[in-house]
Length: 207
Ligand code: GLN
Image (tube, rainbow, N blue to C red; front, side):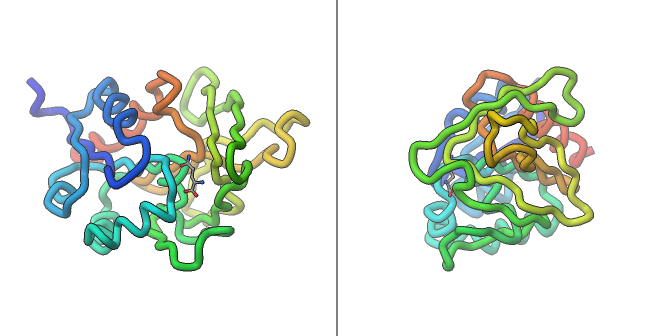
């Protein structure tokens, strides 16, 4: 019964791992937490959760996962990064720590903590490419995307309204081949559509 489900891991070094595991399971995946290289090798796709990109970067080193993860991404493993995960997947970051690692899986420049430094959060309803109805997006000390390369598809931008302030029009969801990234946190809203999109990408890559 369950054997045809794609196996999706959640990088479990830090951050909101449980929420992603639950959302992925509801979206039709077989799920597991990933902390070791053997666990990384076993999955068909990987979610990098929100949390703190500088901490996760350091823990990738400590757990010996940095180069194995880069190798799997280079080999075409589907990945989805939310917030801190988006920062890690980018190839360039503004306002990062000089020693934080980039996985380089998406050709984009992200600005860390763009929506605000500490407690700032922001919410907006976004038009998201491929989704029929708008998506309610919650941003928590989130990055936004300053620029993307030619191979990157922009999936969502913040509505260009006065209420959005400096975030108006900023890119907040992208896809490059099998890699998806959002600046916001779909795992906390109960709306499964982004996780369903990613599980579908993992299934397509296996086929
Ligand atoms: N500001 C965090 C970082 O730099 C990201 C915040 C989040 O993932 N909610 O990694």
